[in-house]
Image (cartoon, rainbow, N blue to C red; front, side, top):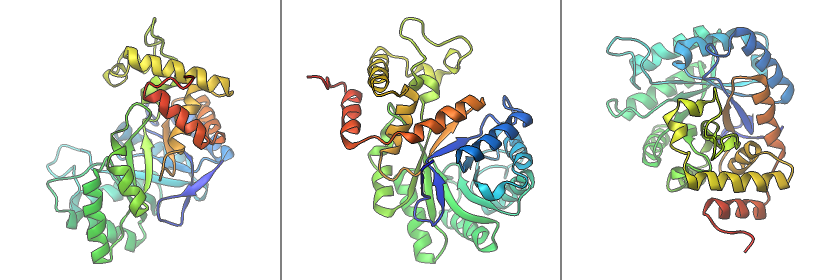
Amino acid sequence: MEYRQLGNSGVRVSVIGMGTNQFGGPVDQDGVNRVIGAAQELGINLIDTADVYQNGRSEETLGHALKGKWDNFVVATKVYFKTGDRPNDYGASRYHIMNGVEASLRRLQSDHIDLYQMHRWDATTPIQETMRTLDDLVSSGKVRYIGASAYAAWQLAKANLLAEFQGWASFVTVQSHYHMLEREVEKEVIPYCQEHNVGFIPYFPLAGGFLTGKYRRESGAPAGSRGERSSYVQAYMTDANFTIVETLSAWAEERGHTMAELAHAWLLAQPTVCSVISGLTKLEHLQANAKAADWALTAVETAEVNAILKGDDITA
């Protein structure tokens, strides 16, 4: 397993991370225990969860599975989304963050969180309040590093510049929606991360399974797959995208790899990416994701893939 720095921090994380939004739901406690054990053997050390995943059950199952193993992992969770029906049960206020971190620590059965992430930007709370609160958590030892999720470049810049002026902890990472067919972050977020050494963590690397290559133009989504019910996946099921995936699948197979491995390897070839968060519901998914870490695309290979993504004929 390859390891990279977590942004401008001194922590090293596996280039393949583990998304746990199905833990405590489709993946029960026994399944979570097996996955955590396998992750340790494979060298995957970044675990990403959130207080709202499966209504807190993701954190709870991780708390049980990580007993005696916490030092082998870098555990990241998030706060922002609604956790109850009361008026202050969401957002980035000091009130909600302080309540949220204590609840997450109880569920995780830990005295600290390695990477605490703001799940979204909160336009109703002054950023000064949010960043001061997060700095207090770092100073207290309850949180070791802080990150953001789905922030725009200007939001990252505003938050981190304020933190720099005040001498507070700043965001060392940002998570964003990013894969071969979703590249909006290349316009501003990734350039910001490059300039300021903020670690970039893509989520949804396989576009809900569409970039595995298992979806066929003639038959559509396989029975039981997410594409049967997910409008997110169905939006990618266009003729143009099927052509791209078919071409890339053949390109990967010629080199002894799968389409899913290529989707991960392409992300890892992008600037500032420190780890790719891949969700899973089966142990086999974890093992397949880990295998993708073995493929380091060369500059020539990356250029060829980018040409295919643009619709160019690389054989011409």
